[in-house]
Image (cartoon, rainbow over all chains, first blue to last red; front, side):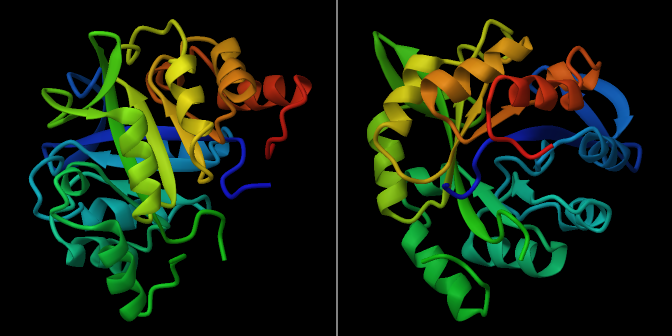
Length: 134
Length: 134
């Protein structure tokens, strides 16, 4: 069996509204007014096997993941949490793993033009004592 | 160690342009003109531990995942592939696992208003002989 076989992944798009994190849907256009941390917990109770937490605020900003949000979620749930939104340099991936205790770090645009090479990133994380498959 | 520990996840936003699948960035606004299947293969060669393949065309349509695209990718790579974009009913999750051989099925909006309950979905998949953690 391969790693990751057959699980239901709950993806949560989150945006800060008046100092709380709300769940957005419809590609980030509609605010459900549901609290993201409560929704993450509920999703896991209902059977989600993995969570992808995407910060709409940080997405594309390249200033780093939303560590505070991610930490609040990883403190509450026991399933793997994948950080999404905000990666701009290798340190950002490391911070999310170290400070927010996430299990995976998702990125897209920084890889496309090889601003960050995945192999370099993995070596960098390994050098920083992160347990990662090379 | 938890399932999914510390991997680099490559997320690929894909849109069909003139009968080929192109990689888009910047929230689906910019066409890189990179072929999505080639990029998936390259991403794995470069060290991605998991791929999230999001169909921009199907996202929000609730007509099912892009099985053809997903199958082309799972046929080429050995890392877990998570399907994203298009889930509207339980059969869609099943089809993606059965016909496109994906390892995870990601959804967001159908769970938010409990159009589909995750626990029902998992039971449904199990009843259909899919190996899934309940």
